[in-house]
Image 1: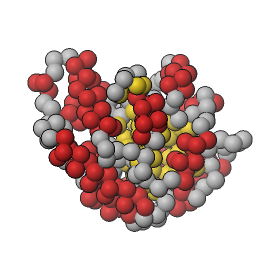
Image 2: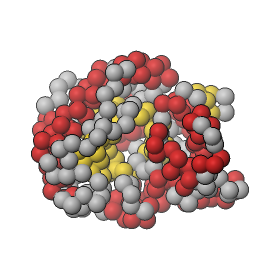
Image 3: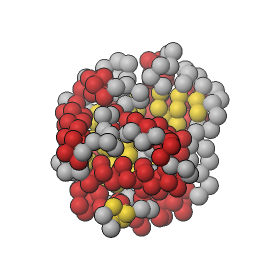
Length: 295
């Protein structure tokens, strides 16, 4: 694990940009960016367009390591280049932004109130490629919709099982069991989730440490124990459907947690904007998220 990158992610001021929309979420991301489905006729063309959007974001003068600690990439982005350089290398060498990779293959159908991650039979091969590309860490997402003890345990066990395999490969895993913001018992789910996290974190051995990506909590400061846990590199928050303004407001009330926003980061950006308009809008977005992450 790159120690300079670890120090930046664990101690630096800033946030993590989530640029990892994939599969089913890509058309929505493009629509929000002003690119309709009529602009492409197949998946390859769709991914060309989303790579162009991500390239525009990453190459913007507003996007660099002064305010952004890391960026989460989709596998296809890792395999592509930005300005003639591998994406991960470009992020670190040109922007001083630590590269992460989304490794999950999407969500299984809901059972016991959760959506587990689909199996990852080729995980080790992907991790080997990621190490060769200069990736620092990974991210994988499951979803919790109900306060179901069995389901929450399954989601956490799966996250930690894969997390240990990722650590073995020399990468830092971000564990992300997202709690839906409209879940009927959101606060109770978060209490059960925190208890489960603490139990599993305490059981880690050696020098194993993980990152956590969590839905912004219903109770301010609720995840303080996780923020301070010696096995946690950093706790980051997803925007989860909140507007950027609301997500920033809640984030600012949770000291020690930093943002890892996707849709909220790109809110207000458009393919139709001039470069000056685009860069100004992105700069304002980055600055607002950066300030909220400092609190």
